[in-house]
Amino acid sequence: PLYDAIVTDPPYGIRAGARKSGSRLENPRPVEEEHRYDHIAQTKPYAVSDVMSDLLDVAARTLVMGGRLCYVIPSMTDFDEQVDLPRHECLKLVHVCYQPLQMELGRRIVAMEKIADYDESKRSDYMSKVWVNGPESADKVAKIRDRLLEAAKKKPGYEEKAAVRKQKRKATRDAKKKAKREAVATAASDAVEQVDEDTTMQDQP
Image 1 (cartoon, helix red, strand yellow):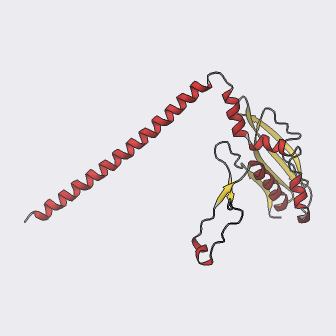
Image 2 (cartoon, one colour; image 1 turned 30 degrees about the horizontal axis):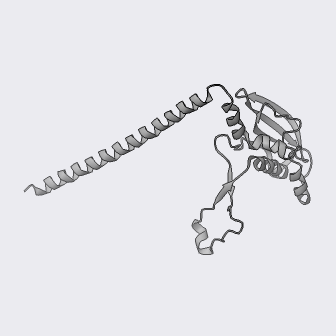
């Protein structure tokens, strides 16, 4: 055990998906010894359900007895904290605070306390019991972005609003491209003027 408390807001894929080190290939090619000093490891998608499972497992292993884990988890209106919150045999649920963000979306600030020693030989059993309802509970957290999009599509005027947003994004991209081209052109013009000025000075007796 190392920590008295762990406080975190893990990535849950609404704006940016989580990633972890590793290759998508089943049999990745090993990195040769002479290239390891500057090797940048590949990354692959890290499912939100796995993020939460690993978070609880790390907390159970590294917290001192009585230590606290505090984290944020997104949830929609059909989320039942009695069965949908991830669990761990070594951690006791102490407190849950719900904060609504939209009509369909909110987040829960969860506090858990370590109440039992971690047994390495039972890790597989711990991990298999993190989600009480299995895939059903995990999916409520893992597919938040998709579910928000589906809910938005059902609202009146969604297509019109989506078209306006798309047009604004295009206008912003075009403006940035134009500004970049103008900056390059200005820099090139300044460089030519500087060369002409230097040449003129060299030609003078």
